[in-house]
View 1 (cartoon, rainbow, N blue to C red):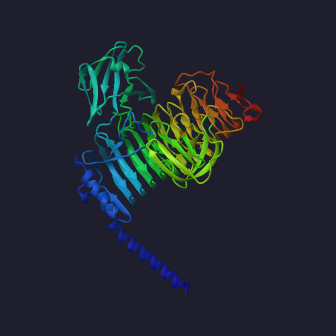
View 2: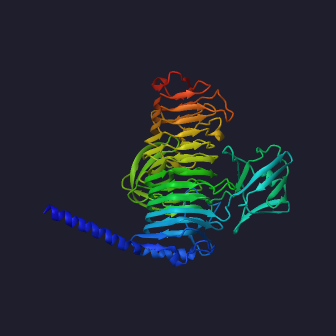
View 3: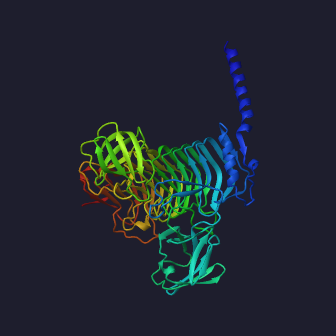
Length: 610
């Protein structure tokens, strides 16, 4: 009997393999069969829409491209209205119209395999949207713009009365009436936000377009412009690169909305216009072998703003073996959104409002969600409740009805966070470089692991853990964070004098004795290469360890050796032990609003209280 069962099992397994192989071809859809031809420089959008429609008819589809270049034009692209977190205010952009190159709506179980193809977008477009989709995999694709909306030029020569510029081949311009005008396919630049970069050092700083606006431009060669004006106070040197863009975030690189089990693997974004890839109210998202890096040395910038932005997501967020280089804002930002109570209609009903002008218009709460109530000035969470019903009554306001009465202490001006939609975060084996802002921003109460990464000269804190209910309204507290085996090299030079590589900086403007915003943060086995003392600043943390780390002094940038290495403000259960310092200075620790008797620290750290 046993042998018969084994034989039947073997036959079933063989039959399953045969059926699987037989079924595979019917589930594979070839882009070429819809007239999507590589290297034709024709608009593939209409044919792409037909191919996606065919994929919808399959239970599990694989859409395969021949390797080559494919062009996406806005002419036949779908235009949809979306309200996307952290993009634009009503004043900046009254109509939220997104021009979408690759649109997946209510589509499940699809693999898109580009076979290392290059998708090239024209004008101002959103590269892709996954809206109400599940089990989507996008892999082996490179994406770029024919004319990036970032304009760049290198400084050839600078004197007090002029600057000579060599314009990048990717940047189109004209000189008219002694002024330079940047333009692209269907757009011209009206507002200016400038960054200056040193390609050899990887150091990026905020700059100003004012001297160029006030000067006279003269074209002196095919891609050479001389600006005659006052450059006596302009901070720049020959070899530096100026990158300038219009700051209005009128598109995004990609949008993942109300979707789940989304994977991007071996995807390179050579340029993204507007905010980067925004994941909003989605779950279980992974980016593996993902990069935002310019395609070649003729361009320094790959991203208009953030690269990966997660707002109100849940499940797991995993970013591994990835590379971020040349961004005008943060590579990774993970957060929720605090909404403010503007009216108490009854013990169970309230009217809440979006407070930051760039985040509004989307449903932030759903029936069954658990919310946490918070006093904004102290960031104290004082109660939880479950949403019975929620409705968006205007782009700026929602009415919430709860299962039970709110706490009596709830008042107009308090805020709410949706804690059902909070995600764990893993960032591993990745590189962050050539960015003048931060590396990773994270405020989520689920588990966070940041390990085996390189943070190379990020202009601000390599890692920032904030939480606020009065500014950006980005929530919330962290409860389990592990930062280990990373390398931090000369970070936060744009944040001086508070140029700490890691900042735990909740914006609780009033300290409540005995209440801590964050807890359980471990920073272990990392190497910090610093040019002057600041390493870590932490505020309102219960349970903070900084152990087995190595701090090495470098001399690449000028520094101030009198500054403190650590600031511990209103924290409890702090341990700084078994760290090594290869520095010319003796490390100092400034303690504020805390008793240093509760501190476990190296014997050679000089402790200052305030």
